[in-house]
Image 1 (cartoon, rainbow, N blue to C red):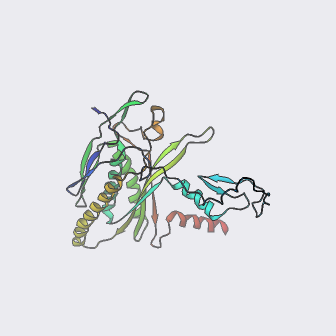
Image 2 (image 1 turned 45 degrees about the vertical axis):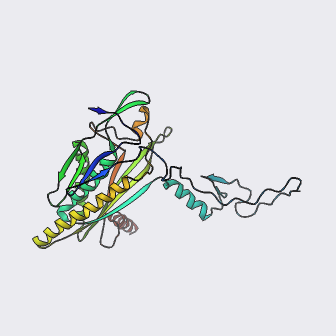
Image 3 (image 1 turned 90 degrees about the vertical axis):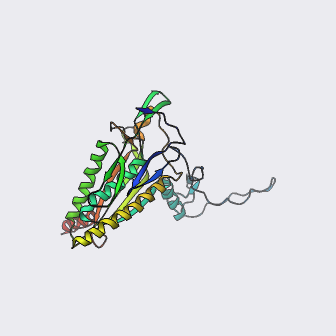
Length: 316
């Protein structure tokens, strides 16, 4: 079954939250800044006015470390010569690179057996709003988008029900990564602290022999704290409390999705693989990747600790 896509007026299915439904109408696919204007870095304040006609001019002597070198420009901000880099210019470069990448951070506290269900609830909810039906091109510039099926999921260890995209392939991919994250938390010892990140990106073609550049435009990070409970009564209370907290988090996700913020523009048929993951048969999410990190009780990442240990060993 196929359905024509109405740009700017389309909406995705409601996300069920603990027995309640939240309407999740998205804005137009593709866009600009919050006010509809492109976001650019502002340059420095304009210099003095030019002299009036007839005024005698004398050349200025270049001074400073960067004298005699041409300046570069990044998004309207002048850069000094190679020997002199001002802090303002360096900040402008960093801001320009990250300008279009949004970052959202969520924090949850769960029992060990609740880790998998809590992470799947968050990741599936985000991907529900960042997925479309399969594209069917008739000719260049004309296409239709298939429907996106949904499915209710009841949690076993949390009083909670969420909605996910009805795609077994996508569900298996998420369960694989979340299972590895859960196992890493279990093997970390002590209090389980970690985070899992879902990053959406688009590809930018590069000339041979360089590989394509991946440009992130949205990142969701879930910080997880795993607690150990001693009695069944504590587990029952945690079961209810985690369900309430997850409901709040998913409502927050829907609110963020409803904002009119940057999304990659709809691609042509030849460029669809640069924006969407076309490898799934029944759904087409934006390109994404999932990574996770485990931290110890002191907040130091395990990967960083291992790096230091190897460095100290080599030093001996």
